[in-house]
Figure 1: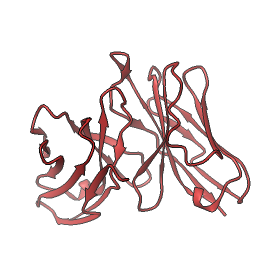
Figure 2 (figure 1 turned 120 degrees about the horizontal axis):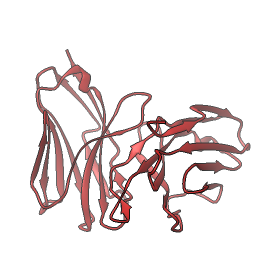
Figure 3 (figure 1 turned 90 degrees about the vertical axis):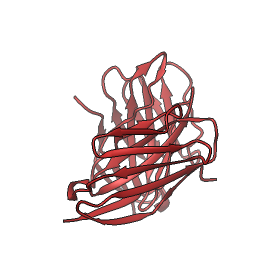
Figure 4 (figure 1 turned 120 degrees about the vertical axis):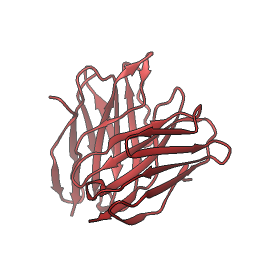
Length: 112
Length: 117
């Protein structure tokens, strides 16, 4: 049973555009929702994270929107750049566990 | 070192052989994780170590897989009698401690790519 569903599997965006990646979860006990960015040949690295007490978190061009009632959260990349081309993973974990469950990833390509 | 170090970076082995993958976490990080990443797939949790507590082995796919962590630092993932479906990138991550538990942020190594012929 996939606990975190991520879409789309791949995404192509023009430079300057907005990239949007969505995730949905099933377990209402989840209380920590990070996004990781992975470049080819490298390990994933934490990009931004949110807890369910807020509906939005912004760091530079990256924003997480969180909808607790719908059990969904999304990553928005504003003014997308070719350097943003990477695979993005959403994840979720529950208090006391700290073992994140990852989505299957989204391959983002930003064309110059 | 400054980050999580994994070795070997690449390993090619024959079906039926045993392999050992090593992870050296960031100094001071008490939590250590192993994940498996297959082509086109997400990150599959394998095992989690937190301090001196018993490891969470709930993600190990079969009894051919085992892991240990010595002295609360270096970890070794062992795969016995390797099969072709074991081919994947094995990622290790560590996490700092806050309030007695992992903070939630994982710091990943670059992975060990395993190819079973």
